[in-house]
Image (cartoon, rainbow, N blue to C red; front, side, top):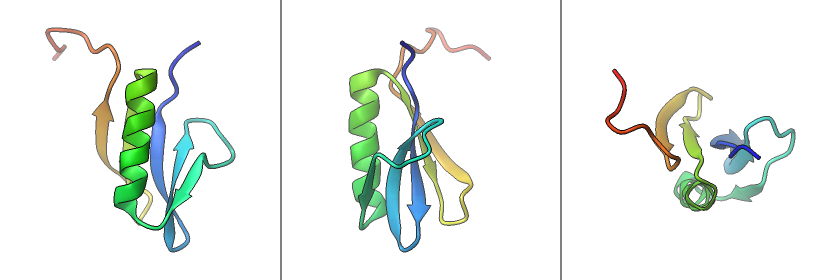
Length: 74
């Protein structure tokens, strides 16, 4: 089974964590900070990536907790 990336996304006036490809959110939070902490915890446990979206929906930050190549490519 492949690790699914976690996305921190705006949901109305709140924030949510959603797995890549999922139609429903995993959990909702009052602040983006709380959502980021939860998404990072999930990603660390699953060796996945976290994509943090801004209020405009665009990705503003990306963190990887998977098995990255060493040394990094490029």
